[in-house]
Image (spheres, protein in one colour):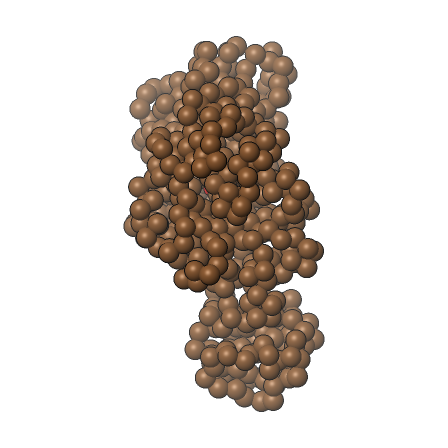
Length: 484
Ligand SMILES: Nc1ncnc2c1ncn2[C@@H]1O[C@H](COP(=O)(O)OP(=O)(O)O)[C@@H](O)[C@H]1O
Ligand SMILES: [Mg+2]
């Protein structure tokens, strides 16, 4: 790209040296720099990109965007704020790809992965092509690649949109974390539809108060912008108390959904089965009998959100209802483990008090014997949610309290915090997660419902800083082979 074009309109303090005619790439990691790259010095939590500018020049960087003049043999552009400069440059370098695509953002405490995946799969079932970025990775219309975070850094985000667009994909779905919003990792992304699932206690080690956490999620709705010539929408959960505040953040259309009361999209006559859910979908296009493979009360809410999001982009409700029958649950979200033993075993990713409550309540309608529930929490992370998690786990008849990536914290420290919230005596504390799963399976009796929560799709356990292979379902199936 011509460097003149790249930096035209960029607000800068000063330029030193001669501007290279072209630049070949834009990077923030000096290790990724190749000949002709423009390197932006970004201040991160642990490292400061300014310290790596020299390395970037050695690797071939021809232009350095920096907040302070450095002793370097390369052209420098000094800016006041390199994070804002990066947002501008990344959008410009990749040709504002988000403006040319249908971009969906999904935020909320729980259900982001589930709703994003539903939108993505519905588009694909209906013959469209779609890319998805979130906890599970970067899924380029069926080709899954790894990603480090639920919401990637700003440059990676723009690269993903660009890659999808280059491949002729016209839809891009982002699972949007509150961290990503506060850190401006989505600056410059032109969202068409912003979806809110719900807000409950999580990540307070980072946000400190629910007010800040709620505000952080709200940034997504203000990011729809003020250009009313563009057809955009906010899809909001009417059952959540933040509905009003998020509606106030955008002048664009608000589409509501609810499990409890009339809204643009709402559910009536819900029937929960062990392997399917049915309900009557009430919509602006009339009533439909809806069937889904997704289980649990929260998935009723999630399917409503996904349908409303696609309706906002002109999809017909009848087509969406038809396609939904075929959509499988995301791996590890109330996923039924196939077994011939007379038990129902689910793997779930619930790791907040609200999600735990909903996971347990969702199996209650078909409870025949007991509900056995296993939950752990991560070490060295938000500790304040631990007792609240165990309090909700007490809804189950028997609870095993364990760990979920203990990192550097001791087993006892984690399980004793959890234990404070237990409301009955039917529980055991077993720090080693493998042993905890085995113990729970030893207690199982015919017709019990078993939920292993917290790990979901993850196939590892992090102890200190090492990832060890771990699978709740494999261990459960081993015990079943011994006992049933
Ligand atoms: N709408 C919802 N409300 C409450 N809990 C939910 C909802 N959707 C999912 N969950 C619970 O949260 C867990 C994580 O779901 P997921 O879709 O991965 O959410 P996120 O990406 O926001 O972490 C699920 O396994 C389930 O237990
Ligand atoms: Mg997620």
